[in-house]
Every structure is written in C-alpha cells, then in structure tokens.
Image 1 (cartoon, rainbow, N blue to C red):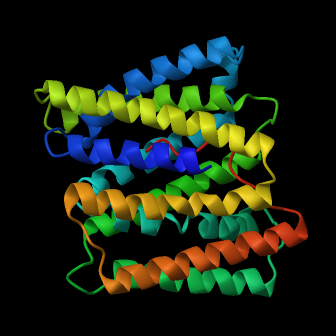
Image 2: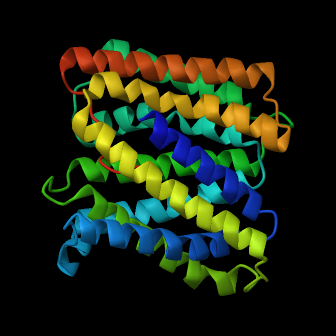
Length: 287
C-alpha cells in the first residue's frame, strides 16, 4: 500500500508539471495511451483479458463514466492548487463512500460512524474554507472528484468479483484516454508537446500503473483492516513533494483539517474492522 500511494503521488506530480503547458484533456489523452499499453501487456501476461462484453456491463459502464468525470475534475484542479491540498481533500473519499453505502446500498452505519463522517466533513470544510479567498472553483473541482469517485467505488462493490481487477483498470484507462482525445478539440485544440512534457506523462503513466499493481497486491494478500490505514501515507508523500518541487507549504488550518479528515477516516476503518466489513475498491482511481 505504501508503494501504491507513492506511485499515485508521483503520477500526480508529473501530471501537475505537464498541466503548466497543456490542458487536462490532452494530458488524459497522452497519458491514457501509455497507461493503456502498459496495463494491456500486464493483463495479457496475467491472463486477465476478458471478452469485450464484460466492458459493456451496466455496472462497469457506470464505474467507467464516474471515473472519467473524477479524473477530469481532479486533473483540472491539480494544475491550479497545491498537490498537498488536493490530496488532503481527496482523503474524504472513504467517508463519502461510507455515507453513500448507507444511503444507497442500505449498509448499516451506527451512530459512531455517522459522527466520524460529520467530523470528517468539518475537516474538509476547514481545508477548503468556503467564503474565504483560499476557496476557489478548483476546490469545488476536487470535491466533485471525490463525489464521482464515490460513485465509482460504490458501483464497484456490486460488480461481479470474478472480473479481474487488472481488466477493470485496463477498461478504465482506455476509456479515460479516449475521452481525453474526444475532448481535445473542445478545450483549445491540440497544443505542442515538448520532449520534457512527453517524458513527464510517460513517467506519470508508469507510476499510476505501478500504483495499480501494488494496490491490487496489497488488497489481495494483506488483512484489509491493517492495510487500509496505510493509504493515508499519500498525504505525507504529497506534503514532502509539494514542498520540495513546488515550494508549497500548507497553511496551519489546512494541516489541522487534514488531521481531522485522516483521524475520522481511520476511526471509520477501525469501526468497520470491528464489524468485519472493511472494504476497499478493487481498483484505485485513475488520476
């Protein structure tokens, strides 16, 4: 899980670097090609290439559509705000998934977890601080990405467990990349791509693929209740990389809000472990 989270932060870092020169749609398009090729080879080697009809199942289509929107909104925000802030807001995802599971899937949630969800959302509000100068449309974009990612993860819970995780990841990567290519003409057209940007997006694609590989291994070989909390290591990675590469140092309020979100998420995972219902989505986000 630690290696997976490192892979996702490296991906975010190089996507942020590329976003200074090309629009989000073009990033999705170029990175999508590299990520799809890498995952296709991996799926082929593992014998996980399923029939095309699996990709057209209603739940996988819903999951894919939600992931496309989550990716677009997250990349849009990432280019305009500190990487640590974006990562901190996104850590509300487990809380939103728990909330969605209670509201739409009928999963039982006791008063302790309801309290943790409320406290966690207070932490998110401290990070984004609506009504202040620090609150921008890009803060809303990350919140939208969290909502779309929750839809993705909730739909994943109801998918056939016999469908290989790598196959789901491959379908998502292809769909995200294709959507990027379709969106390019409507987002200012194709912009020149320098060699450095091409290298950045290739590294990003490799990093996110590494994230896929290790998160799947973590979830299949480790105790979920023990492994899940290590996903919050992404915040530490983001803080360090954000400061070293971009000179971003989160404000004290952002750090306080992040601590509240993480504590609420950890408590929710703890309660779910006690009840024996700790669940993680079988594939990570494609950001």
